Length: 398
Image (cartoon, rainbow, N blue to C red; front, top):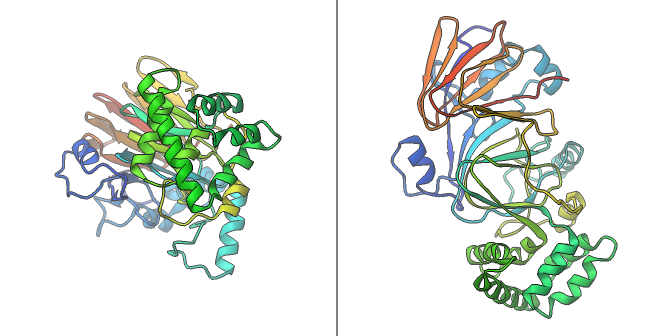
């Protein structure tokens, strides 16, 4: 590879409607535009690649990697993942609920993408399910208190919640839940409700949620979360669907991992998100967008998820390491200096304070919430934070 190993990045902001207009601009120290600033994308996704500041014409990081994949990613990463950076780092700021959604595994993505390509479905069509042929596992690390729905709650607990809501129409669904493939049956039935029955059920369920929220009992947090979803998307069945899911309120520093098939939705807060380099999303609620019920229920995982939080493999006063069960990425959150192994590429994101990145004679000082790409090389790079920093790479090969 020719050129510096430390590549300072200019990172695009995506303006999805659910985003906070102010949170990400405040982190970056820039003026808000008045539009939602939902996600800061850091990486080489072709839809919104980071720009390489010091290079002539500031090319996208995706183009830089395509021109010399082995030089930038290293031989081992290219042999494992091909000539693309396999992970994408984001800062996400939710002021309204995101869609209830699910992501495919790799085989499902490859098959779905090939089928839509063969059928001639335009890649920008609102009815397109698969934008690429990659899976999309992801992990969210809370910066502020972060509210989300993640995976299906154990059935016996949801039956208890339905009873507490005191909505007669839910009794039949509670009976279905305890039969065989009950979660799939109830989830599908709710999505197929005719308009009048759907509106009636939503109204009654939200009235039950108000009673539970006011009572401040064991289900008040779940009830308040469903009410928020209902306020964000009036008349949308998603406000009922989320009652089947674990509601999780992450404290800053806690994380969730969302594997293939995990039905989930983010509700409020700021997080750092690390995911496979994909944009494949199938939606099923809290959205005006296309819902492909048949494909959604085919790829969703209807297994109960007793514990939505994802625990670190190492935790100390100055470093936390997360190793999700996928090869595409791992995340470390550090408050002390670290050496980055040279055999793979890295994304370094400064937190609230300056981070210094050094490779022999080259030095880059990253201001708060700015990022750099570190190419593979022959020697380690040193990173020194004055506060907190985020280090993302592919998983170390076993």
